[in-house]
Amino acid sequence: MSALAPLILVPALGGLIVLFIPRGFDRLRGVLALIAAIGTSVHATRLFVQRSAGPLLGGMEAPLLELGKIDLSLALRMDGLSSFIVLAASVLTALVVLYSLSYMAGRERLREYYTYVLWVLGGANAALVADNLLLLLISWEIVTLLLFLLITLGGGAARDGAGKTFVMIGASDCALLLGVVLLGLLQGTVALSACAARPLVAVGTLPILTYLLFLVAALTKAGAMPFHTWIPKAAEGAPTSVMAFLPAALDKLLGIYLLARVALFLFEPSDLIRLALLIVGAATVLLAVMAALVQHDLKKLLSLHAVSQVGYMVLGIGTGVPIGVVGGLFHMLNNAIYKCCLFLGAGAVEKQAGTTDMDQLGGLAKTMPVTFVSMLVAALAISGVPPLNGFASKWLVYQGLMSLDYGGAVFLLAALFGSALTLASFVKVVYSLFLGQRPPALASVRDADWSLKAPIALLALACVLLGVFAQVPVASVIEPAVGRTTGLAATVPGAMRTHLGLWSPTLGAVLLLAGVGLAAAVYALGTVAKARRTTVFVGGESFTTEEMRVSGPSFYQTIRQARYLRTLYDDAAQGAYDLYVLFGRCGQRIVDALRGVHDGVLGTYLGFCALGLLILLWALVRLG
Image (cartoon, rainbow, N blue to C red; front, side, top):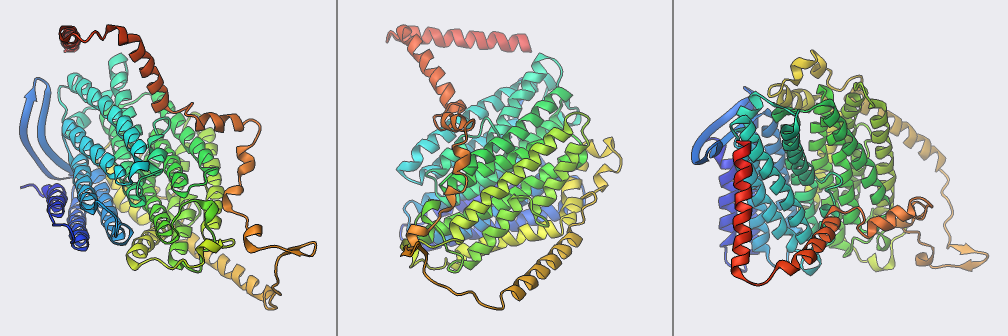
């Protein structure tokens, strides 16, 4: 058996065992799921360490089915790129399962929940180590189905989001299937390693169409614009732990992994295609964060920021230069960490306060100090504040953009402006949840359990360590993963040795801490004399605390009501820019137009099926 098989079999069998545990043993079910996730993480760590000795590890191949040039074989292989993503996915899953022991306690359908979580990990690992593109697609389909089932666990409110998610990602899977078939016809194989050995030049109608099909699949899975709308819709009803697990973390890892494979391994895109990718990345950064600024619901706001952060990854990979690609992949890892931390923190707040409506929250910092500090760290990290991990990866992306020969300054400005808006948005989040005045309804709120706080604190600590010591993962993990398996390291000699350019994160952290210490000393000297406290009054009339409370969501309502932005926000709320809604309307018109053909006669429908098969057969013969 291959050394890679346990990455798939352990969570798959663990989920099967959890599924058949009798009712009434929910605690045991969660503990067994945690053991399976930790076991997978330990094995992934062992493989990651072994991978450092060479670019490939644990290859195996078992033929299953062959149809001409299309070969479906059970081919597994791990290289530098897949090894660290498998490790990240496994560890994040273990943290989410630990968190779920308290967050999901007392809910119905826990048997399905833990089973689906483990099977998602197995499917994701299968996609990450698959050396056959058809096997990758099948594994991806399994994850898509399980994502749909996990979202439905949120109850009636989650059904629309689950349906939209399944349709949009399912459509992207159809695009990926067609792309794999076309690539197999053009390359004569669907083996990933064989295709990567001689990348297809994206010139000509059919190669460009193939590249675009792969691109649509990757961007939809990652949640980049304009294929992003399933993520905020899913956030409306899905359990917060599900949002932390899949849309915020695992889907980003899988989507950007596929994008990296497509842009760096399978194809050699033209400058025009790279420019289109940069435009998509910049638009995703800006438009998603503008939508997040005016949100009142915490989960929906975080989901839109999850979309916005994809833009930085797309920008980094779209540059095509070593330092930009390294930055994009490093940001993929960082985003999974701090976004998972933010969603888990939101879940802890929801568990204790009973709501994620930021209008009804406030003043929880003293009651939930660990959650407050952890979410504050993650908020600063996603905003790109040094010396945290978000800044380190964004810094690399910025340098990649500046090295472009065309439009680098424009895309750099878009990325910087997006970071500024992200910080503004999370000022609102931190104030709404933890600062300001606490509503009377939250007077009895208590701190969360340790199983809720521990994963959040560990993820916040990772944000600090991967920022302060960013040169370690960049030099020892990200750069070798890209350099050993692509030709990027050879294209610009020494470029991948620049690490973090002129930025020294460890020295920067020391200087920042010294500055914070100096500011704290100045503040302490200025507050020796304590201020007098009294009730709030205006013109001699006293007001209650609730009457004077200013909620965080009111911060940026002026943006929502701005003259030229109001129409855009209103149209977006009605689905004017939602591909799911637009294609739904077009599909309804087509259905209405074809209703006259539906005569209820079986022979008519069989004739249509036969005609479609003949057309498909003719197209395949012409392409072959």
